[in-house]
Amino acid sequence: MSQQGGQTRGRGRGRGRGRGRGRGRGRGRGRGRGRGRGRGRQRQKEIWKPLTKLGVLVDSGKIKSIDEIYEYSLPIKEPEIVDHFFPGKDDLMDEVVKIMSVQKQTKAGQRTRFKAIVVCGDKKGHVGLGIKVAKETAQAINGALRLAKLSMIPVRLGYWGNKLGEPHTIPTKVTGKCGSVRVRLIPAPRGAGIVAAKVSSKILSYAGIQDVYTSSRGKTATLPNFIGACFNAVAKTYEFFTPNLWNLKPAQLIPYERNSQFLKNKKEQDKLVSSEKDEKKL
Image (cartoon, rainbow, N blue to C red; front, side, top):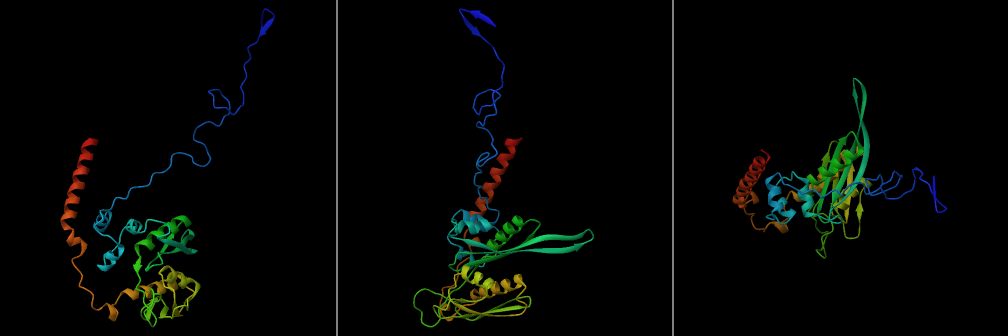
């Protein structure tokens, strides 16, 4: 302590606990990596890099719609192709129908896993069904959604009676089977609604069918077989031509043949890019 002119000056050493943003040792909540919402940087949207010929044609704009893929019966092996044609959440809707546990007997005991059943569709003539088994529920749901997009099929709609307005039902009677279950779909008049069980009605509604009668037989309590039989029945509407489609023009060359030169140039370009990257690493 020193006294000068009646004034005293003291030097104390204390550690304050204020919530400031200074450089002291206070317990402040500064701009750091907090534990709350928004921790870290936002994840950037992954850029899709197609791996198949169909994916390259879709990404480059050579194929304009998903119906062109179904017209030539081309297999879809990348779910990003479906996301390309249905970019918005309202364009393609999905729903988890059921999550159940399945068990397998092993030497170490029972192994429990989860089975997820997911249905997706745009309610305008496209529907998909996916079934996946995984150790965790989230993995099962994501895998089932991926399979539902890969298995998406077109649905041909028709009329009951006079052809007035937009198509509202299926064109003919169809039957689908899976295991011991048989599901039969029958056209219905406008306003009848979907007369079906709760499980099968989800497939029909996501397919865009507004009016239909159904009948089923077999072990319908087995949910995967029941919903699979309904899905197979809906798929049969696109397996044949009704009389009003007999005069259609013959199909042209498949997209692979029409764009063969483009695919060749694209492949050579990718090789050059990959070789340049390898040289930079060395």
